[in-house]
Amino acid sequence: MDTEKIEHTNGQDNSRPEQKKPIIDQMTDLAAEAAGQVAKAAVKSVAKGAKKAVAKRMPRSVKTAGKTIAKAAKTKKTAKKSVKRSGKKSKTAAERSSAKKTKSSAGRKERRTAKKVAKKRRA
Image (cartoon, rainbow, N blue to C red; front, side):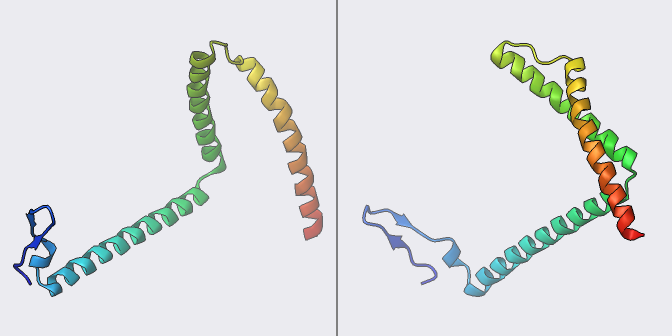
């Protein structure tokens, strides 16, 4: 069966390259492939955990600066796309900042009250 060829109805002879190998070699290849996939998943998992650990230990100022830079880059890209697609101008920087102030001031008040409540609970 190792060297046999399979004939199809159309008359072509096709040999199976996998069946030329002994079954033990095929199983070894399969096991090696599976071990490679497991190792790959493990490395990805460890890297993800390391990223989270580093992110926890970063100063808050660095985190906020990174978020600000990422937001600025994102808004630039989206503003360019919206101008190209619709032909309308996007909001000016002043309009955007005024909208942010109204949103952030409400959130800030909520955070302050939440902190006060948490302090009272601890005491």
